[in-house]
Each structure stands twice: as structure tokens, then as C-alpha cells.
Amino acid sequence: MKTVLFTGLAIATGLLAWKYDIKALHRENKVTPATQTPATHIPVPKVTTPTDNTRIQVALLLDTSGSMDGLIDQAKSRLWNIINTLTTLKYHGITPVIEIALYEYGNDGLSSASGYIRQVLPLTTDLDLLSEKLFALYTNGGQEYCGEVISTAVKKLEWGKDEADMKLIYIAGNEPFTQGNKPYSSAAEEALRKSIYINTIFCGDNREGIATKWKDGADRGKGKYFNIDSDEKVAYIETPYDSQIEACNDRLNDTYISYGAQGRMKKSNQAMQDANAKSISKSNSVERTVSKSKAAYSNESWDLVERSRKDASTLKVIDKKELPQELQGKSDAEIQKVIAVKSQARDSIQKEIAVLGKKRQAYIDEVNRKSATNKDDLGSAINQSILQFAATKGYTAEK
Image 1 (cartoon, helix red, strand yellow):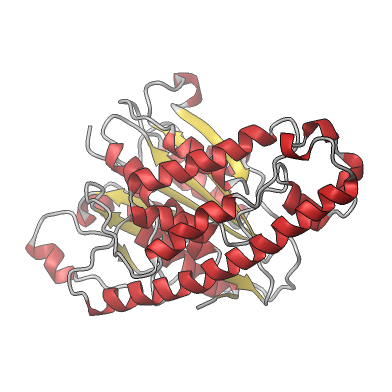
Image 2 (image 1 turned 90 degrees about the vertical axis):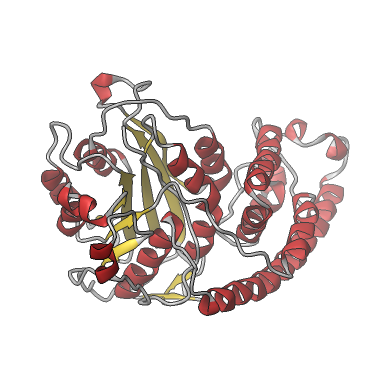
């Protein structure tokens, strides 16, 4: 089994600055990090009116067969960086809803009847849950059916129907794209009928990815083809702002008030995903904290502060017994005062993180601009394609 690895996410400074030395590829028969064959066939969409529920939907299809540990490590390392790229996008001034789905395929631990495919998560806005499920993935040898997993994601996920919705599939692997009974060509046709575009990431040599039809899969899906070195460790750039941003995280977490049957568990999971991000690196932890300052990090289902912002009558409809111990026995007016204080504190901390995050990214962009040895990874590939495709759809990226 070849090494097949999938990763996640480094914000690219330019939408169209994708360079790849094709002469070097012919000189050396080796894996080229994040080499991408430019596509010219992305359709120009109709002009549409933005709505409050305009959506960016991304489905990640990860090969978890026996040699995929590096791919999974890259995904863990770049998850929050990818989220931060997505959160820079606006559609005619409207901030879109961001939904991400996760599939695994090619794992012997999965059912053969399912084609060795499992929906780990449907399209969701619950980013902590996404992180939890990603960190729980494990690898095991198996059969990798690319056409089948694409078709399954197209049919099973609840894709948006608005012209303004941006719908993307990313599939990563290193076995021939032709395996399985479902032709990838017909899976691509199914996707395009729903305006879903397929991007392929081959973990290996560029020419091999072309020969084994990964590029053709992207061409037929009107997306982009990349090849990466999935064994490459993600390179992080430390900045003078990292410690300041990291220090904001504990203060930010203190502004959340759990409620409901699952509230305590969800708040605990928030801390667990902080720990997971930190286990990768300090930089990864900082990326997560920056994500937590954005509107996309939504926890209305368990956080009393966020729910109260959207529904002033929240305290009248929830069971007071499901509030945390420190709020038990308090009047509605007293609880409302606590919520107001927490809400104000959160706004202040998130604004502080946002300012520091922009300074941090500017520092990283400058280092990358000066560096001749900067290496791309799966995160770079995903981020670059997201930004370029977004531009064709009429989305703009905030600086």
C-alpha cells in the first residue's frame, strides 16, 4: 500500500500565485509538494443576490487505508488554518454559513458492503465536533474506491440549492482513481448536476497522479488537480503575536455558559479540542484560537450567551435545571446580568484576537514572500483552490 496522506491548510497570500516548475518535474522523478495543474474550465456563475443563509459547503474525503497516517496528521495540522481561510470570504458583503462534511474511505475496518466508506460527519457548522472526529480517525489497510465515495457524498449530503452557494469536494489518496465498480466519470457527472466541483489531491509524483487518472477526475469534475508530498511535516512560522493570541484563549473560554442536556459535555469538548490543537503545535493552537474569534465558530446549541444574542426570550423557554451550578437559584434578571457581562467580555476578546490575527498573518505572509524554500502542503492546495474558486463565484476575501 502506498502512502496516502491528506492535510489541511495554509492561507495563501495571492489568489492566482500558483507556480510550478514543470522542467524540474522532468529532471527529477520525485514527489513535488502541492503541484497544481491550472484549470481554465471553472464556469462563470450567474449574478445572484446574497441571502443570510448563503453557504460555503466543503466535503473532505480522506483515505484512511494502512499508510495514511501522514495524511491524517496533515489534516489535523491544517484544519483551523483552512477554517480561517474560509472565514475571510464574503458574498456581496454577506458572511456565508460555513459547513464541512467528513468522509473516510479505503479502511478495512469499514463494511465491504458500504464500499469501505463511512460518513464521519454530515455537513455541519459544529467545528469542535469536526475536530473531535478528525482526531479520532485511525488507519487500516483497504480498498480505495474514489468514484464510489464521491458519488456517496454527492447523494447523501444535504447540498445547498442557491446559485450563490459554493460547493466543493476534496478527495485525497494515492491509489489509481479508477478502482471500484463506480466509474469516477459518472460520479463527476452526478456532482456537476448539483453544481458541486471536485478537487483531487494525489499523494505522490505529479506524473503518476496524471497517469492514474487523478487529474482526469478533477478535469471531469471541473475542479483542480494537485499533487503533494504527504510525508512532509507541516512547517510552521512562529510570530511575535502567537503568545498574545494564545493568552486570549482561556479568557475567551470563560465567556461560555453551557445549557441543555449536552451543554456540559459540549463545553468540555471545547477544552478537549483546544488540547488537541495544542498537541500538534503552538501555531496550530493559535490558528484555532483565531477561528474561535470568527462568526463561523458557532455554539448556539449549547452556549447561553450566543443563544441569548439571537433569541431574547431564551430564559423563558429553557429549563433552569439545565443551567450550570453557579446560576442555580438566581432570578432571570440576575442571570441576564451575568449573560450581558460575559457577552461584552467575549466581544472585546474576539476583537483583540482579530487584530492580533491580522498582524500575525501579515508577518507570515512577509516571511513566505522572502522565503525561497517555503513548501506547500495539502492545506496550501486546499486554501489556494478555495480562494481562486471563490473569486470566480463572486466572493471576496478580506485582508
